[in-house]
Length: 384
Image (tube, rainbow, N blue to C red):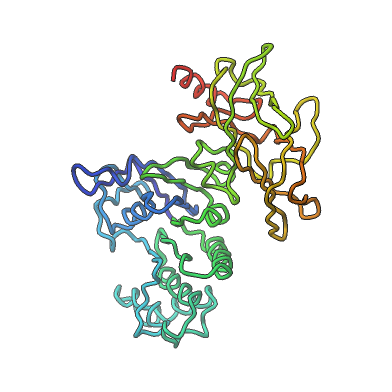
C-alpha cells in the first residue's frame, strides 16, 4: 500500500494550446479508493495516464510515499493498470495472460504458478484458466484483465473506465466485485469513470473534474450533500438536483425568495442569508427526494404545482411538475404517487435546500442558514 499525492500537476500539449490539466492538487492515504469522475473530455483519463507514466506532466509533482515519481518510466513506478479495452493477448490462455507480466520480471516458475492460483481464486476464475479470451464473456474478460494487474502486487492500482463496455446488469455485479476486492486487498486505488453512480458507490474519496480542473474533492456524501457549485450539484446524483431560478427580496427585515405557485406567488423565508443580497438572482437547488408532499406550515409555505409527467421506477415514482417555469422532479413513494393533472402541495426540506449565485455558479448557503465559509463567498459576491 502507498500514499498518493498530486502537487500542482499541470499538463499541456504545446504552446498556444489550453492546459489539459490545471493545478491538480489531490492527496489520498494508503489503502484509500479514489474516484476521478467527470464528463468526457474533462481530463480524468489524462490524469490517470500521467500517474501511470504513460504521459509526462508539464508542471508539478506526482508523489508516492513522499517520493517524486514524475520522471520515472512506467515500469519503475510499481503501478498496475486495468484498461477499458481489457487489452488481453488473444492467442494466450487466461493462465498465460495473468502470468505474462510475472514472466517478464523473471519470477521463478513455482512462484508464478502460486500467484496465478491466488489471483484466480480471488476472482473466481479458476475454471477458466485454460480458455482463450475469445471464449470468455465480457465480464470474464474483465476479471482476467483485473487478474493480470493483481498478480503484480503493486503499490497502486489504476482502473480506467473498466466497466464501460459491459451491459447494465453486469456493470452492477462487477462494481460489487471491485469493491469486495478492494476491501480484501486494501491496496491504494485510483478509478476513472464518467458514471456518478460508480463514483458514489465505490469511492472513499471522489474528485469531480471539469475542463481539467478539480471542482471538488471529498467523500461521496460530502460531495452529494454539500456540492461546491452548480456543476458538481448537477453532475452528482440520479436523478440530478433540481435548479430553480429565484429572486431574493427583503421585506420587514427578512429575506424571501419569490416563487410562482399554481395558485399565485409564494414566498420562501430565507432567514439568515445576508440582507445585502436583496434583489439578487440566485438558483435554488433541491434534490428530488428532498421535496415533500405536505401542506403549508407557519414556518414554511406550501408550493402548489400540477403533475405533468409520472415515471414509475419500481421502488419509487418520479413526478415532474413546473415551478418558476422550470421542470422539477420529485421522488415519491409508489403508494403515494399522484395522477397526471393532479395538483400537489409541496414543501422543500429547509435543512437540505441549497442556494447558488446565478452568475458565478458558486454555492451561497442553505435555505435559512449560511456557514462562515459560505458567508465569505457572499461577501465576495456583493460587489459583482
